[in-house]
Length: 148
Image 1 (cartoon, rainbow, N blue to C red):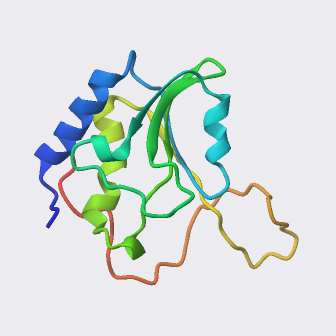
Image 2 (cartoon, helix red, strand yellow):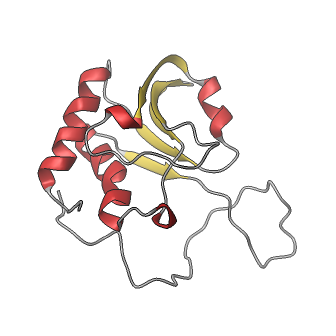
């Protein structure tokens, strides 16, 4: 079973770092319907999740399952195209691995995206919104474990 073994995070970060030409400024985790974002990246490099030590693999059919590095505008971006979920059988330790690895790589900011519903009737499908809080129905937390 996967645990919060710091060596797992370090091994994944070291593997990814060897593939990158530079330290990314920003990491983006793409949610549903945003996979096309990677087409906007220049000087793109991709790594399959399955090749990264201890990295979970997307099981959802339409998730690309690749980590991309490239330039967007003037920013060096690391982008997850496809992600993983607790309902796929992953522990919260596994689900938190990418964000912890981003920090070890020197990423300064991470943007998480997803498809989300709302009770505000003024919102339409496709609207962009910033979520500042959520209702948590599980007792688990990805914040558990060592602060590395």
